[in-house]
Length: 151
Image (cartoon, rainbow, N blue to C red; front, top):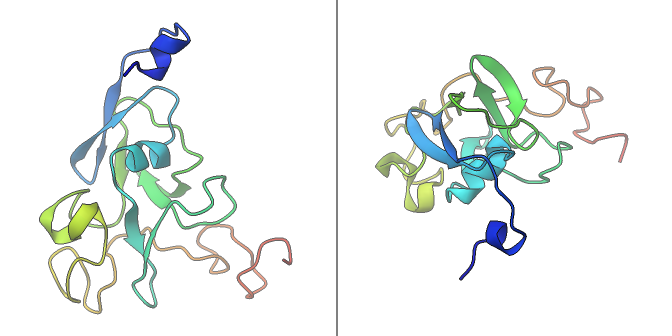
């Protein structure tokens, strides 16, 4: 099977890797961090603060705040909008990286009971990437309804 690049005779820049919670993730130049994670088979990388529900890409266009990550020390960036650059250090707020045993099947969150390694008591993810729309941490809606533009 031919690669899409060969079909259009494109000559893209060479692939590179970023570090996500210490684990290497391959990136095609121009991909967002969210696209690179999705391409690597990682579907979730954080959990909600209240119920510990898994979150990753949802809208993919920057409207929601489900894909928040910390990139090179800058917290609460939307992975779906942040272009990956060589050498980026991405932190999801989880000690275990994508695909590690603590993550459960498929590199997803929720692979075990509350209090397992890499999680705070109660099953909540550790770290600073926990913003929810309306809580002031990520410039989301501030009306308390959890909606965008009143919808």
